[in-house]
Length: 190
Image (cartoon, rainbow, N blue to C red):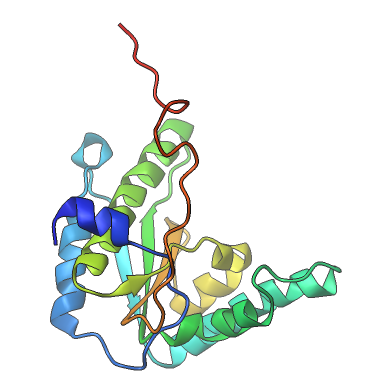
């Protein structure tokens, strides 16, 4: 699959088959992430590959966040199905957490976040090219303290994003693009 196909086929997958992903495929995906551009070529990202009972612990934390919407009088986005997704990360056999170095200086904090986000995008596209599903998630970070405890993440690391990783048990349709012809989003400056 070429890069343009992977970009157009990538979807937020929220249901996964219980089939494990080969460790070699996970390393291949993370190698693609590791080749992302980074500010000053620091390559300061780190990847946690979470499996087994730790996913269940993460799911309890995320489920509590999503369930909190209902307690506050709002229905969770996606309703009961989203609550099930939150509890199990859609049944994915692996969850990848992308970390970066924490920084006090705002310019370095931004550079680290942008660099690790580029690595995350490479990860998503590489997974798509291998026929795997992902879902870029920041919602679980609403209970960052629990995530740090569950995964033993030190204070000198910042959590950037989380994604389940597995074989999709659904084929979400493409979401419409805002301004698909780029008439309002592109401005040429000479």
